[in-house]
Length: 111
Length: 115
Image 1 (cartoon, helix red, strand yellow):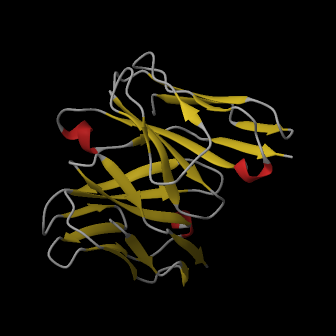
Image 2 (cartoon, each protein chain N blue to C red):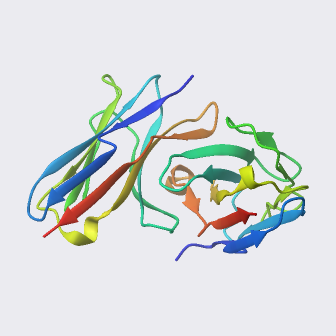
C-alpha cells in the first residue's frame, strides 16, 4: 500500500530564512506532485516531477525528486509572508491511476 | 484559470437530507476524481472515474455515490446526510495525453456542513 509522509507537519519561520519540507513515500512511483493550498481554498499545482533527479524551480520554491530514496524535497529560499499556506506532496502510479496525498505541511512565515 | 467547476461552494443542511454536489469540467478530460478533506488535514480519495459509465471507489470508504453519464459531469450524492459527512469535497480531473496527463486540476471545493 502506498503511503506518503511529510515533515514537518507545521513550520513557523521568519521572513528571509531558508527551510526544506520533506516528502517520503513507501513504494515505487511514476510521478510526484507538489500542491499549495490557502486556507479555505482549493489546491494549486506547483510542480510535477517525473524522473529521478528532476529539479524544478519557481520563484523562491525549488522541488527535487530522488526516486531511489523515495524522497522529494521542497526548498524555500528567503521566505516571504505570501508563501504562508499548506503544502501537500502527492504520489501517483500509472497502473493504479490514483494519487495519494501526504499529510500536508502548514507553513507560517512571520516578519 | 481552472476549467473545473463545483457547486455549491458552501452548503449547510439538516440531518437526513439528500444532497448532490455538482462537478463539471470543460477540458474534455476522461479521468475525474472526488477527494474528501477535513479542515487542515490530508486529502482522501473517495471516488474516481475513467470515463463515461465508469466509477470506482477510492481508498476511503464513503457513503456517497457518484455517476458519470457525461464526460464533463461527475456529481456526488449523499442520500441521507449526517453530521459525520461534514467536510470539504474536492473534485479534480486530468487529461490522458502529453504533459496535461500528469497534472491533476482541482475545483474550488464544496464545503458541506450537516447539522
